[in-house]
Image 1 (cartoon, protein in one colour):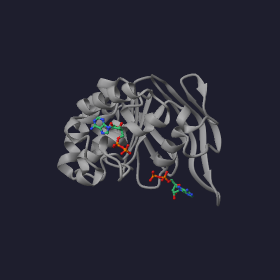
Image 2 (cartoon, protein in one colour):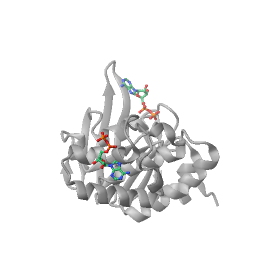
Image 3 (cartoon, helix red, strand yellow):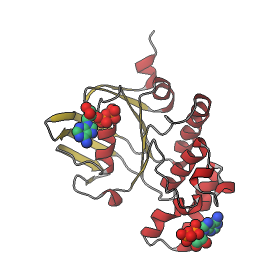
Image 4 (tube, helix red, strand yellow):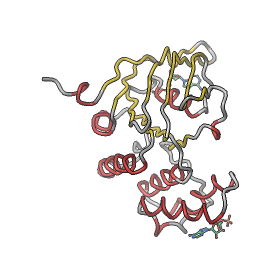
Length: 226
Ligand code: ADP
Ligand code: ADP
């Protein structure tokens, strides 16, 4: 469980490219936040800074009450789900989900319990012995979600997780991710350039343009015009 505080966050890439400029946001524990905006507006960079995959050039990032600017990704109590799934092709679904916990020396029985519970929730129990190449896109994305879930993170970061799926599957996965958020009762930060996802999924929407936050509001306030 964690609130997140972004205070005057900047990202300046080499060559003086300001990708994110003075980003300020207080995210409540268990909130579902959407980051939306056109390609290149700084969504991914923001998410990667929260994950610790990209250094923060200026400003302060708190997860809970801990300043995490210099904390390694693995020590941030977050899990990230990528657009391209990033599954290990030579490992089974089970192993893909278990591997991160094995590296952290989690007890084998505990790993087994968490993998099976995540597989049950995501309805992929029957796929545990398969390799990723024998899965559909939707199934792969479930495995990627499962791999994040087994870590019981306080914060889920999702970077366009549905953009590689066809339109029909995207619609059903949207609903499933909303349900997953309710079930896990953790903080979600979800990046998308898709207006429908932005309108239907989050508690609040952060609209970005050219590295700058334009608006932060509920979907109702942003999209319903009297
Ligand atoms: P989005 O996720 O909204 O598409 P990004 O965060 O990926 O946007 O990119 C924001 C800006 O930062 C873009 O102008 C992009 O070209 C630039 N950028 C992203 N990654 C790098 C990098 N590693 N080096 C230099 N510039 C980058
Ligand atoms: P490797 O061949 O690299 O050891 P495996 O995929 O065989 O990787 O799995 C490693 C561990 O995970 C083993 O202890 C195995 O018992 C367990 N495991 C793998 N798949 C399953 C499964 N479907 N159900 C239960 N345990 C599994």
